[in-house]
Amino acid sequence: MSHTHTLAQHLNWYNIFREWKLPLYFSKSVLNHISHFVDGMLSEGFTGTLTNIHRESLHNRDRRSLSHFLAHGKWSEKFLKQIIRNIAYKQVKWSAKQNNSPIFVIVDDTVCEKTKPSSQALFSIQGSTYHHSHLKGKQVYGHSVVETMLRAGDVVYPFATERYESYGKSKIDLACDMIKQVPVSNQKTYVLMDSWYPSASVLQTSAKQGFHVISGLKTNRIIYPQGIRQPMKEFASYISKADTDLVTIGTERYRVYRYEGKLNLLENGVVLFCWKEGEDLDPKRMKAFLSTDVSLTNGQILNYYSKRWSIETYFRAAKVHFGMDRYQVRSTKSIDRYWALPSFTSICCIYSGQGSLLDGLHQYRRQKKQHWIEYIYKQAQRGVTLAQIKTQLRAA
Image (cartoon, rainbow, N blue to C red; front, side, top):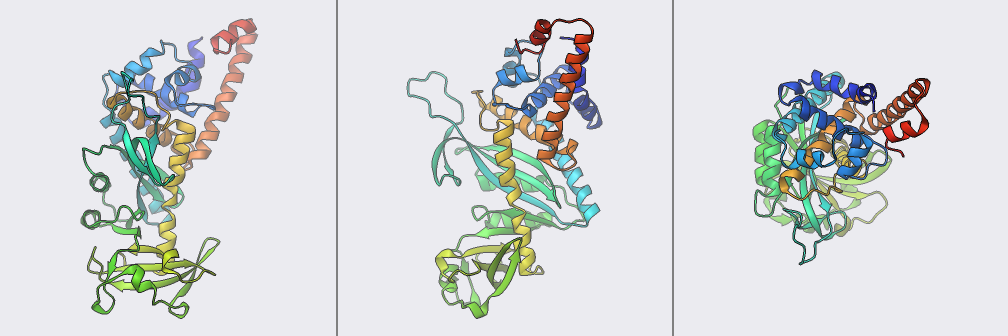
């Protein structure tokens, strides 16, 4: 295959890499591998395998060079992760200033489920064990990853990704480390998380950074109405419809009771007791939300918390389109490096799609088809046979 076609397919990424100063951190050989990973992961029908990356990106070296790149290549995924953080923060901060909106730091985790190997297996995937899947509501086998994303307005970028190990740092500690990595800015910043993450250490870390926290809250948490220690679920049984306000978020309407005061987690905060409009105010159906920013209205708290959903859609997109959970590498070093590449691919995609992951993905796939059509047309003009073109495009 001609070098001209390879450049046409990857030229856009090389230009972006230079803009981001990647040549200062990585050799030409490493950048060539990274560009092939980006191109392969963005290709239509990508299944997550290195064979797929090799075929879809038209890599001119042996497929085994990709597995060697992950397992033994002389490059640092830490530098790549730092570049991801720098780009994400820069883009989100710019969007926040342009739209005069807060910055949201979204923390969550997901499980990359794998098949449990047989007891006879000689080479099982390292670091895999059983983790609780919120999606399936049960223990599943695989790897757990803690992710942090940044958002301002409609612009959402992956910021940090870390693999959770049961014998290493807890998910709470990983979340605290990621929050510390977010630079402090003049824009108001909120840490968003579900009910599994709010803890004293997360709240303290966020406060030290100057960030507020908005999170889901388990209904067995303790509050102190009128100075009386009481579980939230028990307190909720005394709430009547007349005590609530009607709040509309999107197309949904909620009955909301606002408590402001002491919790076991902090001296003063806001807790919202929420039910869908039309439902009985049953404590078992109640959803609770915490805000450390007492100046926010009920509507603002719920609206800001709804921004957390973008990390769920990102997990789905990363698994469906970028093979985040379909890797077939075995060592933890290769897995950690592999996980850095979908995050970097997402950054490239969002950047080229002007803030939208799916827009960038569809745009790239459309451009890639155009490049291939142009290549086939030019090769045909030069008298190259159809059989040769099929061989060059690995379609034979």
